[in-house]
Length: 80
Image (cartoon, rainbow, N blue to C red; front, side, top):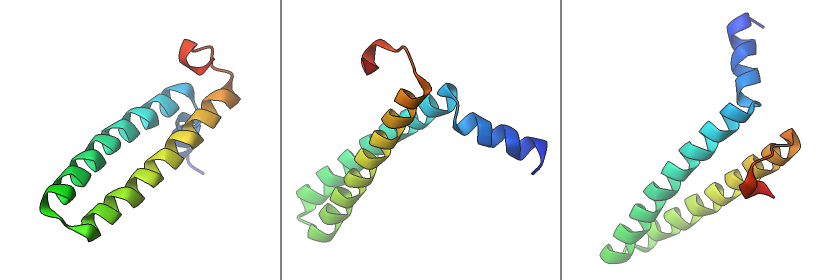
């Protein structure tokens, strides 16, 4: 494995990497909320189902990020 690939792998498991993942997941949640609102307004059941599945994926991703932050022993007030 090259040095650059090793740095990227270590960044993903760092606190900074996890907070970056948390932020990008939050932007994804905003996008899904907009998609669901449009689907409801248009009465498009298929797009509404797609938004619901995407929302479930976001919730799962947040749970994984939370678990990794707890594993790192973060002293953040929000994590308890």
